[in-house]
Structures are given as structure tokens and as C-alpha cells.
Image (tube, rainbow, N blue to C red; front, side):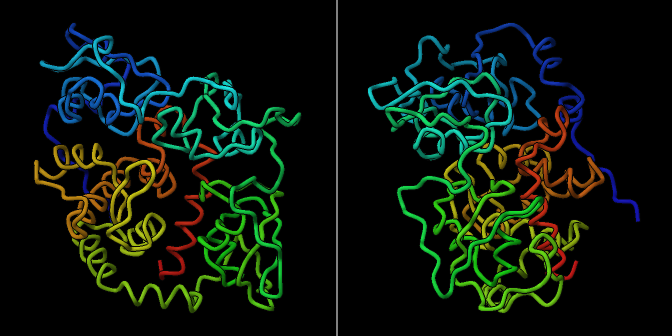
Length: 383
């Protein structure tokens, strides 16, 4: 059955039809701010005194989560020009010191590979450079690397050692642990399902900061592995039944599950798909806040909530800390992406990396494990 097209207000439809470059050309002249490496609308709003909603409206921004380095944004009335503002400490890159270096991002690198190369951490690099989305850096970007070793490894950051460095030493395999070699298209979630472990346990045992990023050939200690591992490949876990631990967790959080199902049914979004996204994002928990500032069951950024409210919910208030309101906004956003792209993988990529990035570049490699995990979850949930 063909899904109904989304009807938006005329101004929003016009905004969607414009590329970021086209919008910049047609907007009226005025005080502007230039987007820096690691900038977010939240950071720009903080240092200029503008509100996120005002920046979105003034620049006809379609996806508030995706702005690009060098982009010029018009400042609304009353905002401070960038040169007059004092950057917030959380957004200002640190000045390189005796234990810091400046690294120029190469093609194929990620914060994790750079952190491993220099013996630093993803969190430290993100904080030093004001990076909100740890999965998104660009070639040529200059990054301060705090805590860099005096002598950096000779290998390229793009091809780090298979086991990441961490302030928490990886566990030594014991009677209930195995070492798994990552295969193509696997994710921490599929590996956890395969061995009856958990994503959190594997990430902690191996010092993994970005749970969406593992690489083929990487060796992972798997705590709590069953004595006899399943014979099927972790990349293609059995669809039914769900592992007992996972099924028990779903049962414990049934109240949230029912809210998601009700909202998905009302919007015409496949319930198992919405459930899978919510579980991947938060584990169906309303009190989760990510390092990037994403909030609640559906892990939405405040700027995204403003956009969804104005463009899709008729201005209705979105309270990201209220489970029902958060789920309503997240499912509505999924509905929009499904309608726009007509494909689950592209809709998920837009949810993870941003709509503008998908439109311009397609699915980023870093998004593929995230997509694979959700589609596997959807199968386990009966989709």
C-alpha cells in the first residue's frame, strides 16, 4: 500500500527544495557566522546569542543536525557577530601543549583510529575540538589530540592496531570469555547476540568508546560468552527466538514498548522497525542522554526536536525528557524519512548521519553497522 506523502507548510516545502548552497545564495544579506570544524547549531547559538529555532528559520535549514564547514549562516536580529563573541569553553579547541599534537584528518580515518594511533581517547579528542557528532569528521580537518604519546606509532591512524587502547585494560579471556575476530558487516550487537553477551560488556572489556564502529579483523574479548557458541554467523543471527536475556529486557520495559507500538501504528510506521530503532538508540529508556546531547527513547537532539515540532507536528511542544512526547517526535521523523526515501536503509542513514549528508553523499561507511544492527533487531522483534 502506498504510504501517504507528507504535507508541509509552503515555507518548509520551499526549504526542502533548496540545497544548503542554493539557500545561502537566495537569502538576504546580513550579519553572518561561518561554520567551523566541529560546529553544531547548539555551539553557534551559544557563542552568538541566537536561538537554534531562529537560526533554523533565518537560514531555511532543512536538517538542523547537518551543517558543513565553511557554510555561512545569517544571524537573526540581536545575535552577536562571530568576531564579537567569546566561544564557549566546551566548543573551543584546546591549544596544543607538551602532550598534545595537531592531526590533519586523512581519507578513511575516524576519531577512534586517530585516538588509537596517538594513545589518546575519542572522548578527549571530541572535547578538545568541540565535536558533538563523534562519527562525523572530514578529510583535511585539523584536530588537537590531547594526551598524545611523545612518540606516535609509525603505523597510519587509518589502520590502527586491532585492539583499541583504553584507560580500562581489556579483560583477559577466561572461562566465560572468548576472543572473536570481527568479520565483514558485523556489529557489536550481532556479536553480542551470537555469544549471548551484551554490547555494553563487550565495549567495556575492549575499551570501545564508539559502539557503532568496529573493523574487520579486530579481535574482541567477549565476556559472558556461552560455553558453546552458536554455529550460525554473528553477521546473520537467528531471527527467532530472541536470546533469553534480550527477551527479558524487552519484557521489563514493556510500558515503553507499548508507547512505541501505539505511536508507530497511528503513523503507519512498521511497529517492529520503530521498536528496533528505539532499542538501538536507548534500549527503550527515557533517561538516556548521549555524549552528543541526544536525549531520551529516540535519542533526538534538541535542534532536531525544534525542527520536527515546527515542520511535522504543527508547532506542538516536544518534551524530550517525556517518553510519550519523545517517541511521538522520533516516530514522526522516521515516518518522514521513510516517506522521503522509500527505503529502510536510507531512512536509517538519515536518522543516524543526517538527511543532508544522505542526499549529498549516500550512506557513510560508519553508518552501515548501525543499519545492520537495526535491521537484525527488527527481524528478532518479528518484522
